[in-house]
Length: 210
Image (cartoon, rainbow, N blue to C red):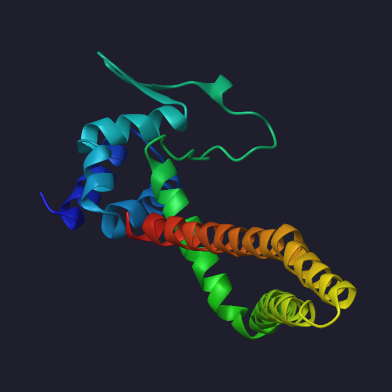
């Protein structure tokens, strides 16, 4: 039985059990998307026509017994619609898939809005990285140059040479204790942000393709 025949058989089964035509069309409208457009796995989970039909009848207050069908009047609350269909538990995966698809569409539609914000953040991160690299290079090269100059001056004026050597070593020490750890920490932060963003995107795309 293909999907079109399944819907025809389901409509006929519900009518044979005394369900009102308007309620039948509402039920078919609700489950029709799952039957016609759902994956093969979702379609198989619906079960046979009789199984799904009995679930729909039960949700409408019509229970199929051994001697026929009967309707529970207490199943309806005044002021509420008499044909409210709750999705089956197995439809949660389909709902999550639709939510993921809507999220992707929303991201695409709002692309002109958030792309400027993202580019600004990326530019700020690049600027911070460039500044840290420049400071590391400045203190490392400058400290090394002062230390070398101090060694040279020690052959002429020992106090000046010692002072220059000390200043150069201090600059190298500040670089090693401050700027290099900050640079490593910032790189780890960037890696964490990238993993988080790409992880969320992968979850959304896998939810749509599932």
